[in-house]
Length: 597
Image 1 (cartoon, rainbow, N blue to C red):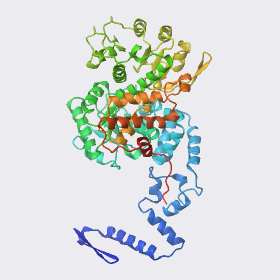
Image 2 (cartoon, rainbow, N blue to C red; image 1 turned 180 degrees about the horizontal axis):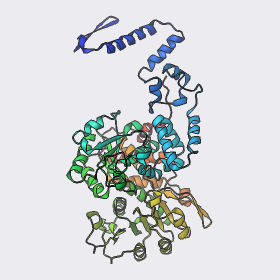
Image 3 (tube, rainbow, N blue to C red; image 1 turned 180 degrees about the vertical axis):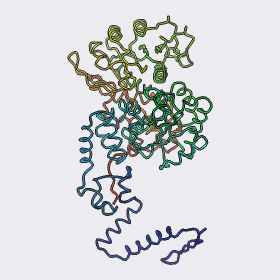
Image 4 (cartoon, helix red, strand yellow; image 1 turned 90 degrees about the vertical axis):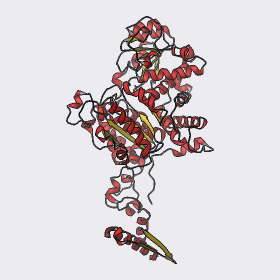
């Protein structure tokens, strides 16, 4: 093909002349000529500028650089960078710091009149300048988390086709069957460590949004970066467009997906299998997070693939982990032990049954048998209390079907069972009525009220309702954020039971250790770590989760614990560093501008 011969200070390269076109040869010779000029030049401004440009030859320049959101700094490019990168004259003359840019973003963001407008504004910033986007989020996480994720992301998905600006991630349809690996190969980054994938059938509590559910993987991966410092180039959002049964979307000319009914059966399973195998082929070792799949698929897909590839389901395992973390914290307030509690779930889907299973694991650690542990957990679904006498129960529900008369009303179930905690995962608003909350307060000195359904419009009760109707004695957590509540002479700070306390740290720990599997033990350990991050002062203010400004430390602690488990259980593929915490901390991306000169 070619030969290279070194002769003193020269290199002679020989190859057939038809192997290179004239344009490529010309670019090569121009580069050689430039280097020769620089070598001969003893100094001077022109020579310095040429040398500077030579050092950044691998970067795009001019308008191309300004349009690259990964590299763009906007007005923060220094004068030297502007000169070297062909930006002089293309930017306003003053150089701003990143802090000044953050100030400008916040000033304009806060002028927007609605949350969906703020969401669109922030996503547009992400399209222009990713470093600034993540800096703004990290420095203002309590204010902006509800904008970039729940509850506003739900509204964004509902309007996705109408606010669509720029594509993100990979879309895969049934017509791509047989070439999914090729599609994944179109992604511009080849070192992907985390994929969040959805088929859009159960977006939050909003139902089937099809391809318009892409806002969820995009939002989740933004939180991986903000909360755990996983570099955005290491993550990939994926939507499997299997169609939709949503009549509104099937008739919406601006819908982003293919307008046909949902694919089910063998073809669906074959698409999932091809996708899972393609990830192993294109991005070996990548962790897959299944997100917002419907109940009919979520449990069985997790069961099928959890022991084959590095994957987990956030709606089942992530929600379980953050819920159990809140329970651990609540018991620090009540002084009770886990095995003495009775938990009544409103809703028996992915979140509820997943939480039940993780609670069983925790109870078994406390010495109960699995059967005894399950008797601590009761479920109430759309047809009433889950009891042995029912013939309509699926496999997962049957494990929690206890001997008890049928009960069709949730308030009656609370009165009959006398639970210490009620956990709402039903997606049905206002199901925790004043009567139910009063009954819980009558049964318990400190009733545990977790209203975890998302978004806010689906919450079983508000924070104000929980505190008001329990005389200020409720230990409350919710799936979406609520403002502080002043009642009964106290100010309460409601905790948001957000999976963001769990999945970013899980992903960081898996990435750091090269873990080949994500185990239930990792999620139980993460729950304990998160609970330990809640201070006594937090508990006194009503919080059962650490304040969000501490989320990076929480994610680091979770990552270290997860990596330790991977090493202890033989799941790690990377050598264990001497100082694991320092090593993982060093992996965390900080949204600061790097110098290009």
